[in-house]
Structures are given as structure tokens and as C-alpha cells.
Image (cartoon, rainbow, N blue to C red; front, side, top):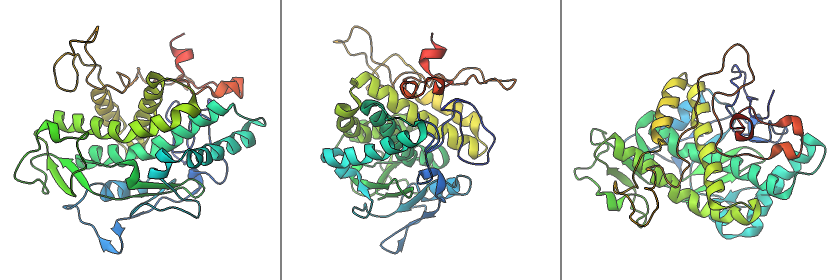
Length: 341
């Protein structure tokens, strides 16, 4: 069984799909996310939210019914007592190294030898992005709403598997009950100054998917910038790692929810290579047009489903987690070093 094939719940194993803390290094120790019940509390400061004023709580609650691995609360970010605020993660190198050291200790316990510092950092990146990306992709998948979140809107507590998110503005379709009368022009999508709380309407599904990619990219850019000195890899590889975490998270969740095929289909469309930049026009300065999904790696990497009990993954990862440097036999079934060799 490969490092990427172990599921943390009683659900039947599907090779290549990673759970919240199996990560590129396989299942974590008893203090990991996989040992903590997943519950959601759709309140902040004791005030209940409603489906018409925010995005996410209903989606997180539905996932919580099938994935006993995380605890997500809609609340302001926290710090201290083991909490790491997203704002600290991207501004305080010491806070980032504290998060990475958690995965380094788990790697030592699992493999009996220290992980290379860059490998531990890569695992830490995966295990942060995997659940954080679900804060965006699950509401899109289940509610057709895209939260507009910044790192400062979340906090994580890796030791206990807790996550807080502060709901705010979100994108939705014109037929959403929360849709305002006016439509947000493309220039006002993620990348602009943070909008006030509330719904922002986009015209159609394609625009909502573009908004999701933009919201994820805006959230992840400072995260990847913070991790880069520790992971010691360039922007293209970092975005490949982020693409893997985003895709694998929703693919895994879709399987738990009984909607794996729809998850595969929608992820493939979300990260389709395309032929143009975000504006729909080729960049005249580029040798070739930027793909629509940039800066993410084009293509979700899905292949024909594996069958016959084979260890082959039905997804080829965009990046290599380098876990084989700690244990040669831990090479992932979906590793590009294997599937593209």
C-alpha cells in the first residue's frame, strides 16, 4: 500500500486519494487530524448564521457527517494554546517553522529517521492546504457559493485537528437566494480589495469557476511565498503541490459524499488546460497563451479508474512529495516519477 493510498476512515480504500492527514507521508500519528471527530458550529460570537447570509457552514456540516477527521467552526481566527492564525503563518517565519516541526516529528516517528527539512516542509504545506482549500471548494461543490477568504480569516490547531474560518463575502449565481440585484464585474473578483460581507453575483457557472480559482490563488499566493524558503522549490513546483492538495481534497470528500464521479468531472473542468488567460485573451508577451487555470497546474490529472485490486492510482499527481527519500518503498502510487516514467 502506497503512502497516498491509506484512508483515515472506515470507507473502502481507493488508491491515490489522500485523506486530511494521510498526506504525502502517509497516515499521521495519534495526535493527527485523523483522530479527531469532525463537527461544525455555524456560529460566531454566539450569533447563528443562515444559508442566506454566508457560504460554507452547510457544506462543512454535511462533510462532517461522513468525515470524522476535522473540526471546523465558523468563528474569528484564534492564536495561542496550540492555535496558529493564518495571518501569523504568512508573516512570522517562526510560526511557520513551528507548524513544519509538527510534521517533522510525525515523520521521525513513522519512518524511524529524520525527514529532510525540505521534505518535512513539503508535507506541512500539503497538510495545511488540503483542509484550507476545502473551505473554498466544498461550498462551491455543494452550494455553488465561493467564499472570499484571506489567510487572516482562518486558524488551525494541528494537534487537535481544529480549524476556524471567519465567513465574509462570497460569490454566487444569479438564482441564488442570497443574490443581490447587481452583478459583480470581473474586475471586482478576487484580487481587488476585500469586499464587505455579503453575496457578490457572477453571471454563470464559468464565471463562478473562475472566481473559485481566483479566490484560491489569492489565498494561496502568500502561503506559498511563506513556505518557499523552507520547501526550497520554485513557484511552478509549489503551485503543482497546491494543485495536488486542492484536487485530492475535493476528490476525497466527493467520494465520502457519494459523489465521486461528479467531483472528478467538475475538478477536471475546473483545472482544464484551456487556451487563454483569465481575461479570455492571450498574453502577447508570452511565448504561448497562459492556461485559464493559471497559476495552478493545468489538468486535474485523472486517468481511467484502476481496477482488479491494482495498486495503480487513477490520478497522476502534478508534483512529487519526496517521501521516498525517507522510505524507498513509500513511493506513492500516483507519483509522477512512476506514472510518467
